[in-house]
Length: 146
Image 1 (cartoon, rainbow, N blue to C red):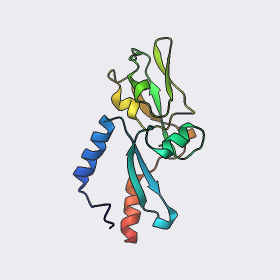
Image 2 (cartoon, rainbow, N blue to C red):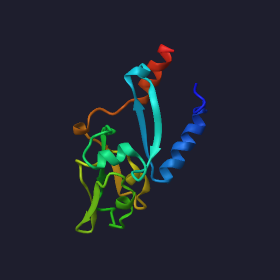
Image 3 (tube, helix red, strand yellow):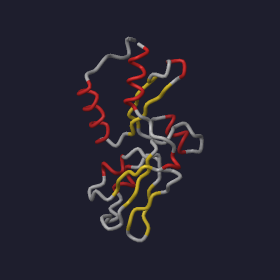
């Protein structure tokens, strides 16, 4: 372990993720082949200070989609704009009094869904976005290698 990291209990990790989600930050897990298939870094970022997110938003792909995409239920959406403000990838807009998702820009992070006061936004599996990362599989594999 390095002096810049420390072990945390699963409960603390969940609380950090919950808190960062409430702040509207996107969860990222970075990997490196040199790290033997293990996590290299786990970040909770916003597009104003994350270089990878900024590059991605400006056309240089640096991030992999979650394998999911946001979907809006027009029956529940009141076009309040909360999801648009929260979206770190500029993937949401409004049209005809409902939020609209730009599927090409959506990374499936879920910040819009967790922040929607009407529960009108949810994530759905999107095969065009690739296979979701199964963290439990990675953790099991890493434990076996340790």
